[in-house]
Image (cartoon, rainbow over all chains, first blue to last red; front, top):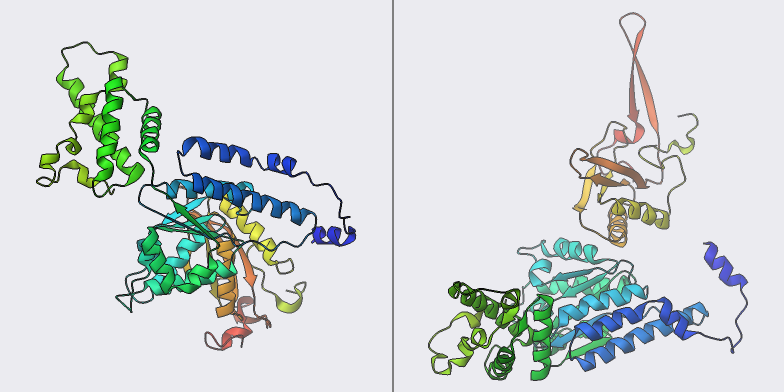
Amino acid sequence: MSETNDNSKQEVLPDDTEVDLQAEFKNSQIQEVLDKLDQDLIGLKPVKTRIRETASLLLVDRVRRQLQLSSMAPTLHMCFTGNPGTGKTTVALRMAEILHRLGYVREGHLVSVTRDDLVGQYIGHTAPKTKEVIKKAMGGVLFIDEAYYLYRPENERDYGQESIEILLQIMENNRDDLVVILAGYKNKMDLFFHSNPGMRSRIAHHIDFPDYHTDELFAIAKLMLAEQSYRFSKDGEKAFGDYINKRIQMEHFANARSIRNALDRARLRQANRLFASASKKLTKLDLMTIEAEDILLSRVFKEDRLDSDAETTSSNRS
Amino acid sequence: MMTNLGNRITQGQFSFLPDLTDEQITSQIKWALKNDWAVGVEYTDDPHPRNTYWEMFGIPMFDLKDPAGILLEINECRKTFPNHYIRVMAFDSTQGGESPAMSFIVNRPKQEPGFSVVRQEVDGRAVRYTVRSYAADKPENERYS
C-alpha cells in the first residue's frame, strides 16, 4: 500500500537518468548461475545464448520497472525440444534458479512431472490431480517432461485434454505465480502444438537442444567421471573415443544419457576386473582408473553379435 | 456478545479483527508453509462454537512452497460458497504435535444473525443454558441465502 503512495509522489524521472545495468547485473548474482551453466554444461551453444538473452531481457525489464517505464510481466513459459539426453531437465533446473535470482519466481524450485502425474484414471480424477501438481509448483517452475503425451489424438475421450485446459487457464491467469516449461522431442512437440494452438500461443520461448558432437560427448564423459572420482587411463581414453564413435551410429542413442550408462557399465567391469586380479596389490590409483579393457568388453565392439543378443546396452532409456 | 457488534462469530485467530485482506492471508499462509504445516481450506454454515469439524474443501495441501496455490483454493471455495464460513487451517504433522497449529476465518456470510440463549430451569434454582444460532433454524445450505 505504502509503496504505491511513494511512487505517485515521485515525479517522473528525466530522460537522461543514468542507468547502471552492470551494477544491477552484479546485484542479481546472475553471473554466478550463468558461469556455472557454462562450466557444467558442455556444448549447447544455442541454448546458452538463448538463456543469456532471456536473462538480459528480464534484467532490463526489471530496471525499466524501477524507472517507472511500463513493463508488462513477460510471458516466461518455455518449450524445450531436443533428443533424449540433451540436458533439458538440467537446463530447466538452472532456469528456475535464474528466474528466482531475477525475482520472477518467488521460490525457485522445480517440480518435474510427466503425464502420469497430471492425468487421472477416471472421470473427475484429472482436475484435482492437475491442480494439486500446479499448486505444488506455484512460486517455482513446473517442468512437464514429454508433454506431447498429454494429448492423445487417437482417443478423443482421453483425459489429457482436460489437463491441458486447466494448464492453459493457469498459464494465463497465474503468470506471476508459476512458469511452465514443456519438454519433449522436436517432431512430437510440433505435432502437439499443431493440435493445441492455444498452448503454442501461450509459450513465448521455444528453445531447441541440439545433439552433442563426439568431442562434446567425450568431454561430458570426463566430467561425469571426475565427479565420481574416476579417470580414464591413456588407453581407456582412446577406447572410449572409439566407443562413442561407434555408439553414435547405433540406434537408441540418447546422448549424455547413453554416455552415463556406458560409464556405469564400465565401472561395473572395472570392479569385476579388480576382483579377478585380487592377488595383485592394488593402489588407490587402480581403484580410480578405467582401463581400455573395461570399455572394449562392451557390446558395441562386438558388431557381429549386435542383432543376436539384446544385452545390457538396450537399457539406455532409463 | 455485547461487545461483539454485528454478531460476528469469533473463532480461531484474528476473528476480532476486521476481515483479513488477501495480502494478509497470504502472509499468514507463508508463515504456515515456513513451518512445514499442511494447509487446508474448510467451510461450514453451522456457526455453533462446538461445531469443530468443518467440511474440507478439496484435498489437504501438502508439500506446497508458495501461498499462491492456497489462495487459489480459497478463492475457488469463496466462489462455490460465497455465503458460508470458510477457514484456513494449518496442520502440524510432526510427531507428538499432530494437531492444528493455525486456524482463521477468511470468509463469512454477509448477514450473521447471531445466537440466542435458551435458559432451562431445572432442579430448584439451577439453570441450564443452550446457545443456538438463529441461522441454524433452516436446513443446511439454506441458512444464509
